[in-house]
Image 1 (cartoon, rainbow, N blue to C red):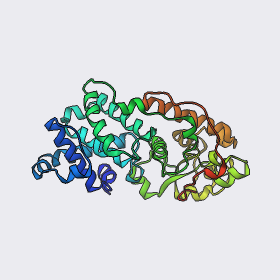
Image 2: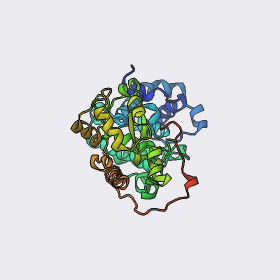
Image 3: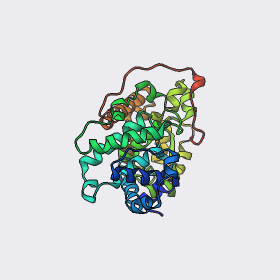
Image 4: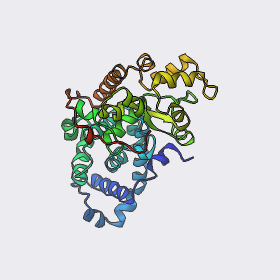
Length: 324
């Protein structure tokens, strides 16, 4: 199995790598950041050779930050388009600077603001050219980057994150890993290796059939708040049953045989209120988990989530076909 950094970076495109090389050469030359395709094509061989090694180090450092923040497999990187900027900033730091926690915390804040502000879906070249100099200044004591000041997430947007097509959806799912979610089979904290070995994916906590029986609105049923990483074997046992039934099965079925208190601990590691799900109280479970995520997102972004909801028509809700 590849190292965590190698696994995270395995899908990085050559153009992204070259973009980071170009940015680093411009940072070192103290010239204007410009990274459109034409700029890449005009980059000199000398600039490439002089900076490729430090950029490789920069990407490895960026991958370590992603892993620390709970983004542990390549398919769950919310915005691969963010990585050249992040790698470039890391590339011009020495080892001591790159390993300082205050610096990593600042870069993590920029990362999360981009993810939950959904800033990197378009205009990537111009955003990269603006953000890199501002981040470089900020980590040395300058003003916050504009992207942090502009970022916002609404409660309504959070409640309508229903598909992994969305970067913010991937961001919330990564927060579950970041918080130390445990594997339902082994009880151990979920790792990159475990995701592949146990076929762990994001699945419903209150399954679709159970939600339909409880008359739960579709947008709440499909919301990331009602999903968590579960291994394939456990998910087959869950089926379409209510939590009260499938949790009892996980405790009593010899194929699982998870002690009651241990199962409660595993649920808590996923920020799932055990009493609420054991009593099939969807509203209590959903509201408590929503507030947990809002509190954590506010901490990571360094700003408040904008409160207020607007329920959308049922037909507008996206479903992730890879989930059960």
